[in-house]
Length: 382
Image (cartoon, rainbow, N blue to C red; front, side, top):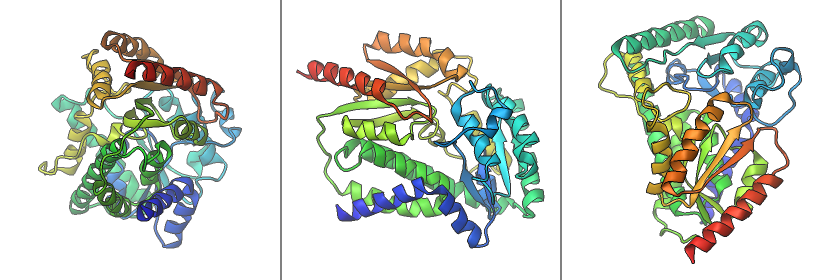
């Protein structure tokens, strides 16, 4: 158990000290590129010998970003721009920015005219008709253009051979993270909700081969333990991101075991590996994107697939309910809520909706909702 605690402390350190991680890589003579949400093909960056460095906002002041955005835009986007403007991201050679929701579209242009003067932007405009051949061809060209911009900005060369090596590294890391998520669900006494978050979050600030090596050690130790009983609640979490320290403390205090998640910052991008049999690396990336489903920011003509997926996630993992953390002023999540609510009501599984903001410090309402939810769960178990 001591070895597990030591490994968890390492992951926590990496998750909570991104600037120190960035400085470490820069001091070693490496270049780094910021990877902004969502679905930026960071394998291209890794294949270039450059460090992909995750940028997902976080707690901190939002002042200069308000000069470019109305204050009601969701806080993660505002904080991402603020970090680029206030020096938090200094040292990055470039930023890879996508446009997959209604906030990220103006974000890309606001970034270009503000922080883009200091940290150049590599722009990706994914095609949402991604499954058809024409969509795959379009996205392959988008990824190729991003590769060429990266080569120009960072003065590097990205070869097909190195891309295929990167695909193997990333597939292995996704596999280990998926394995960890399953192990965390069966070992809730050893892996607290906060531990789970730190293990997954740290991957954004580490080279994936380094993260995989450390995670393999943890997974091996957890696999050797017997499954653990749990008298708290078992939940599926859903939303964009749930890494707020105050929220994690509430999870731990109220004995919340996250048995699975539908969170963009955590599991959504881990579901689909790259098909290594596809010869053209850009088409391989486009094919991977084509097979990503059950995500509110991705177009799907089957409007019932998404709510069924989240309900099934709760059923298959024997969850007591789903905690939906709705990012304030995120139109995409707000529009899909009625369909999720309807599906969970039909399945007779509790769906608890909570307003969420990365800058939140008062979680009184969340505590009240969790207390009520816990009482309902305990009554149902009697």
